[in-house]
Amino acid sequence: MATLCPLAMHVFKRGVTGPCPALEWDGPESRCGLVANPQNYGLRRVLAAGRESLTAAARLLIGATTGCDARINGEPANSNFYAELTAWDRKHAREVRDAKRLWGMR
Image 1 (cartoon, rainbow, N blue to C red):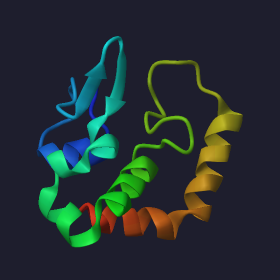
Image 2 (spheres, one colour; image 1 turned 135 degrees about the horizontal axis):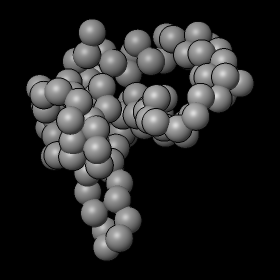
Image 3 (cartoon, rainbow, N blue to C red; image 1 turned 180 degrees about the horizontal axis):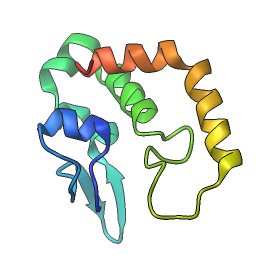
Image 4 (cartoon, rainbow, N blue to C red; image 1 turned 120 degrees about the horizontal axis):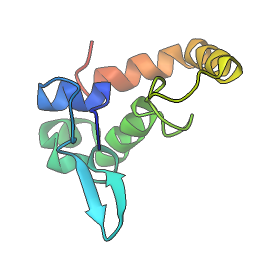
């Protein structure tokens, strides 16, 4: 709600200040539209690569598998958690690179 993730900054061609245009609401709960409905934000890419591929790539890029893409959000630093994220980044570098490619990120 407060900031855009790197994927949203790329898709919407704007800075980090939110709220994110892809933030979708279902009553009191929100979800990432880039994950839930990628066709609404990148139809050409969905047509080229498939909805499931773009959804999986978006999930990876927003950090859905690690808790969140926002690693510095004003909370006290957790060095053990950051070390785990760094190790995760190294282990999944190829997957992240491929996901970025699907969304047209460099």
